[in-house]
Amino acid sequence: MNINYTVKRSRKRKRTISLQISDNSELVIAAPYFTPVAEINRFVQEKQNWIHKTIQKRKEDSIKNKSKEYITGEMFYYLGESFPLETFFEQNERKGLVFWGNRFYLNTADAAEKGMFYFVSWYKKKAKQHIRQRVDFYSSELKLRAKNVKITSAEKRWGSCSADDNLSFSFRLIMAPPDIIDYVIVHELMHIKEKNHSAAFWKLIEAVMPEYKMHRRWLKDNNHKFIL
Image 1 (cartoon, rainbow, N blue to C red):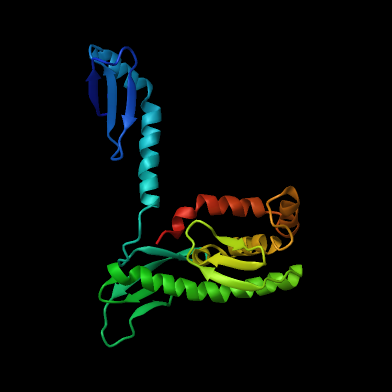
Image 2 (cartoon, rainbow, N blue to C red):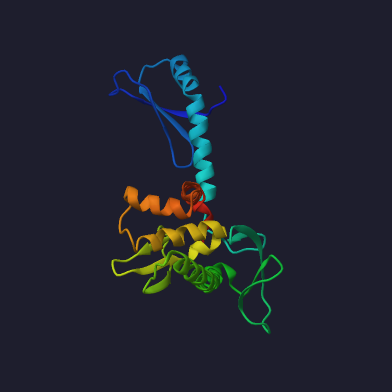
């Protein structure tokens, strides 16, 4: 056997053997008290493919969902590309974040505590510039006018259109590739015409972006890249 596990025997359990993978990926087998070791080994052997896949997925999810540490060498996304961060502290220079030469530079004495603040501020500024320009472009192309465009800190919603045609976009969207940003903008602008996700709504989207399903899939598959 190449799978380590812990057995918990129970006099109350009548027949079945079950398994559970703990949060730290340890395998625990629950079995009736007098179950032979050979039978338990056979049970684990039969389940080994599922066990390996489940543990691997948990490890990948843990990496994906890991919050940023704001240390030198860490990668951050901007317009679909990832760029390294270099942290330093120079008291005589302006504190904060700059992007230059395909690299982020963070000047602060406490990057771990202030890193998120500086990145969010920078992303919001860039999102405001880029997204509003693209909203203006598509508004002109589609003849759809929003009353207002707002950049928010939403974590799970890329954009929204209110009942009175005010558009909101998460600053995290600026980390995505330009064509993905355009898709979200077109999506929300189309809600000025159709306030739901009916078949008619998706036909409007498809007329402008035939590949919109690929963009939707990209957002779902790459959501973890936007964690700060």
